[in-house]
Length: 146
Image (cartoon, rainbow, N blue to C red; front, side, top):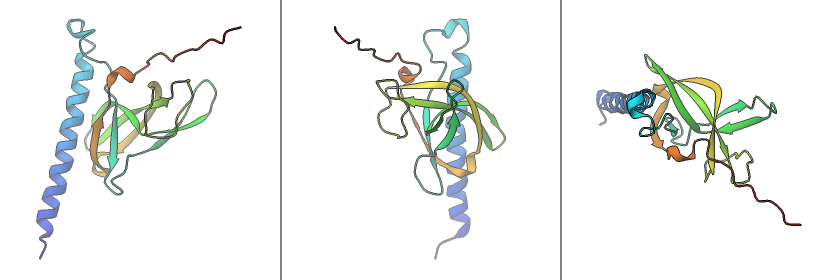
């Protein structure tokens, strides 16, 4: 027989661990702005969140400000934690040629946006940090020879 209290405790512990990880990332990003840590700590630590309903990456949509084109992403930057919610800004995944990707696989770079979403931490089951070196990485420009 499965004890409902045992399942609830595991769920609460999972949410607590995820919230603790998000707080650590947020604190590191805030410290990166201090003069003594500039160039040492990254101002943006990108990550992927996983949905507790599907165990798949959590995707959301945004619109670019320049071309007003819709994009889908599962890459985020934490902006704030408010009670049991997390405020995130969307990171736009870009391929090596500078095109927006609609997939989780192999972005060449991640572009910061001003688009924000608020997600309940209760809806999430996991987090995967991504290399901060992908943030605003320069695209490779190949010039054609005459």
